[in-house]
Length: 404
Image (tube, rainbow, N blue to C red):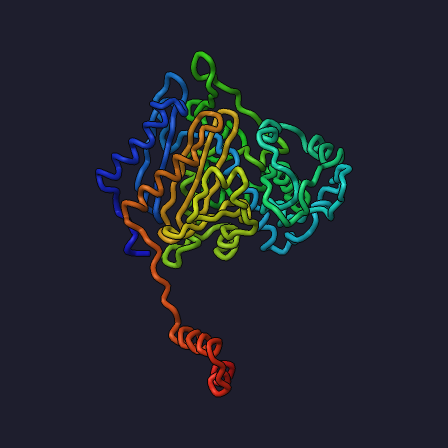
């Protein structure tokens, strides 16, 4: 990885990245955007454009936005911590923790999805955007009432990718049952504080009001400011507030798990962080989520609280997007180089994932990055040649050598 380490961006590349970001504002995709690019402990770019609130200046690294569904990686991390402590079996059914969980009357009734299935978006629950984004503030009792009224499973659990926020809301209940404490309190004490993410939390009061970006939607006469929601039983699906500096540290913690030369310690082991970044549920290219990003050289899947994708040229990317009323966010890192990017925008579903993807791949293009050729073990190559020879013409003496 050393030859792909960057000490600083060249002026031409820096100018191009700034242009990508400033265009987001001038083209009216959002009132403001903040982005940071990191590699290891280095911060290669910190840039803000536009107005974090109408009439104010551009956002900076400490400006706090809603990060929406990027929050799911924090929820999954908390579940993995409980798993690693021997307090939770990820293959337990959700009904062990939410006994109210009932399937709606349908042609077929399935066994309840497991914790792992819900974490990997294969629980059989249908996609529920943007309904779930408006449910953050509801109580635990209201959530359990939804579960008891009957939940439709539109696919057999464990068989198909379907992005379910309700599934992650149920996972928040699992954390509370196992720990006997509030989900938000547990995540703060077990994840946020150990990683020193002091400007990340589930309430806007984590920072002073003038440090908060305002969220907007497009109206007939310009940008319309929206109220902040939450917190409540759905906070675990997307309720976090955070800033570019904290979220960059979160990316650094995960990206570092892929680099034996740069390991960042924390509340979850390296092995478990790597496990979260691997595909558990494949995303079919016919799925709307994949169709917006897909090309013939890339395939996609969902791990445990994170998206994972593989490109023939660039290799492994890990990411998550967030979309909430008033906000859009995306975090993304490239496993082979450790390069990571965070983009925060303050407009409803403005598409920060596209901004972040363009930034990171612009840097990789500038590096002229290619996956290295795989060195095949000499004995493996020899055995392969022998096996091919046997297929073409059987030879008992050679076969004895191959299968000895």
